[in-house]
Length: 184
Image 1 (cartoon, rainbow, N blue to C red):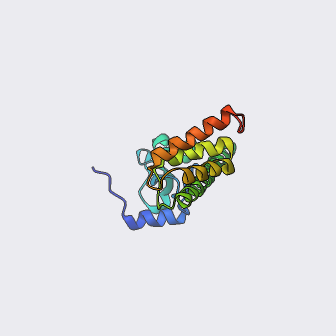
Image 2: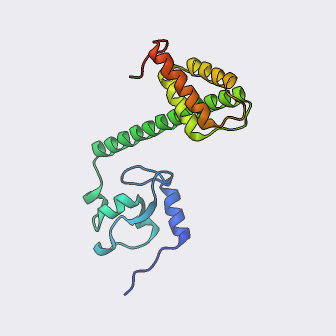
Image 3: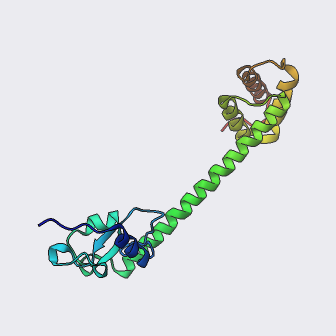
């Protein structure tokens, strides 16, 4: 005899009842894919009635197999540890996101200054990356000064590669003259 499927409306009702949260590890639908699990496994005589169905993430459900909740579920200490690890991972992801946003704002500031100084609309990504690297090592104001020198010294039609080489030359000269700190 073939196992009977569970309707979408029953799935939604069980997910809703369980607040779209894995009953084993506490992760939610915005973090993991949720599935239905049988509290009493079918192999142990459990039915597919909503009362016997619970929300589980794919990881927990695939690891549980034909065991009941009592045979599988982590104890409170394990659950709290997993929840703490999850929160720490979220904090790390949030910090990485904020760092990426700050980096993008920094790059935009350098790009805006460069384009304004040269009276152009855009610049090459390679030149931008080099200038940002210099700004991180020597300071934004120093690099802005180099950009100003290049904008005044080179013809306005000079391409970014030529301007970048010119700025790199200014940097090398200032390092040799000990005007700015050497790269570490």
